[in-house]
Length: 272
Image (cartoon, rainbow, N blue to C red; front, side, top):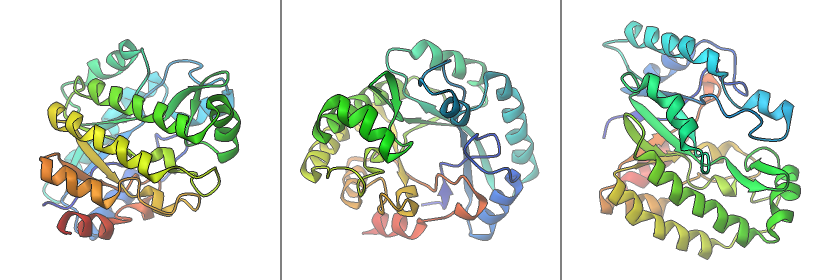
């Protein structure tokens, strides 16, 4: 098992940190990482979410993508021999709009080494809604729209299953991002039935195995006060390993000091 951080962000992230990639990479080298995947949020369809301020914070503009790829490519060369810097993107599952995803991916298919496919948006009150924005926004635009947490969770995992089928078509190594993101605000919303989560995760296993799509073992939930746990449970990691599904640690770092965060959890789960 190589020491690999498979999910990270850069100054191109609108809700990230302005520090240069060098600070992230130097920390990765110091912590003994061998591979480091840079997986920035690519552009989104206009008005995907009916909130101009939020839209401005979500992702790169389409016009910025050439600069992003050149930026990471330069660091890839600079760190050659010290750290395998992999060029990637964290795609959003866009329900019924694969044409947009294809438009984003196609020009970069030859250079993309990692494609993380994540579910951040669900249909809700007033259109598509971001599931990991704020607890109050979730309550008003999703919980009140669906009526119960059980229904929101089912809708989320329905989208996760569709996201796996979409991820297969992306370039490079393919992984499903933070599968437990729906629990980000679990301490501030009505409780989620853990038996339901387990049942839906079990259903995902054969889809991952058949597709060859891996799992982003995302530890960012540990640093979110409203969540307080990793987005991928230990039992699920073990089931993935048993099924031959690739599990790759992901810090989901948006600041240099977050690189390597939660690695001990991943290491323990992989050897448990």
